Length: 236
Image (cartoon, rainbow, N blue to C red):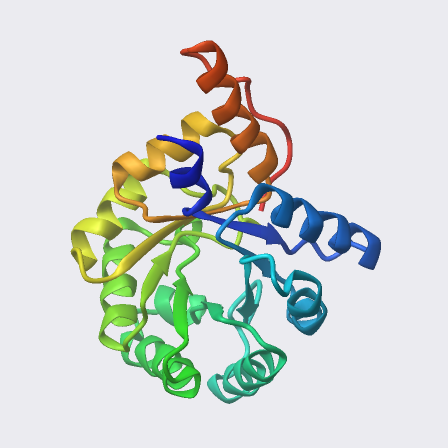
């Protein structure tokens, strides 16, 4: 997979709560320099990120109900409308995880549908937080998100237990078919892991290790290296 193909997969995550404005700016500039598909920033950073990245070709997305999904549907709608007003071009919402674990799939679906309807033509991705769910719950959650009109289902926030795994990506892809996107996020820190997720069925990758991954692509292109440079401790 060449560098342009990898760039087109990456939503560069800038979501850690402790990041300062200077930290955010440094990562926005890095995302622009590496020409990734988009950044995914904290809701309060959307307007600033849009301003800073104007003209770079890098989109600005954000998260809704993050990181626990426990806010009401009405609160998620309000947060979505603010994010859209600030210039977000995609929304990654956290499903109501407690409702999913309770088997209250109508509530889960209604929660997603409220955001999808508020978003209009804007892409909505639904974070399932697969670390908390059984395989059967992942299937049911994926179906609920799809039924509500979500454009993507997504593995993780990166803040709860295990992140993306290839078996979960395969399960989500098998469940939603070709018409709905699948995003792998959480723990994707190197090129080998990214390629594993793509092979399993992911068509978007959330990572805070974008520079490392793209540097590894360049390294392999230059040297023909078969092994990765290894992972670091950055995550999302």
